Length: 266
Ligand SMILES: [Zn+2]
Image (tube, rainbow, N blue to C red; front, side):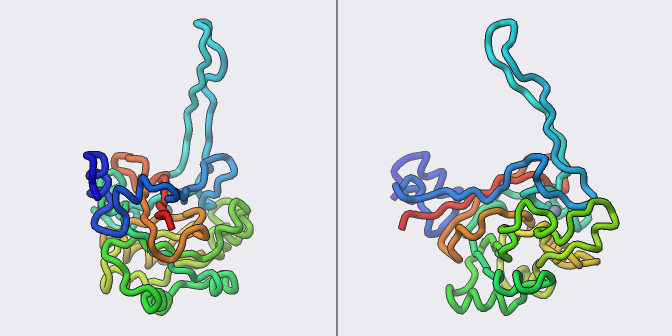
């Protein structure tokens, strides 16, 4: 039941679904943080410099008040981040151009941890998607599909998470982590209507990918991707909502993103 202007706004924001204004304010509902923090320990691609926070001011001022301010430097594609479609498709949306509608929706968690933990080169298949549908029904329109490989348990140990802790161009060939198979990506965009896709590894294409086909398929259909998504083990396979708001970098190919999921009260 919508009782206030504020509540009405929230209903419009999340669209027609199980989540309503009353759910948002309901005692027992819970927000889950799906972003890692950014620090010198944050995992970046082997060819990208890591996150750097520089202290500009920290201490008491002559005027008698405390003052802290920093600057930071980061690659767009490190830590929990978004890939804008333009990352792999010329002329498509940059991060500031992605419609807000795309960045929120009902969360669908496809759990392939059993396969992926047994095989670092595992690529989630169409069968993994249809298995979810056999249990829960068709993927809801506007779904945010989150692929859970279980590799979040290795964060921030680069050796175990990426397959190598080495840095530099030669390390790229040593990346070994699971991803989403290009055929499954094609199925998601051609047979279903998804808003975005996310994964708890460093890339939606598996570590050994050479052509980044899954990135290209999703980008060509304006589907943004979230990578290094945290805490997927805390979400049920359905019934939650996700909001993923990236830093609004004009012309950016991606950037840091704060992703949250709402678990309604049970
Ligand atoms: Zn990326």
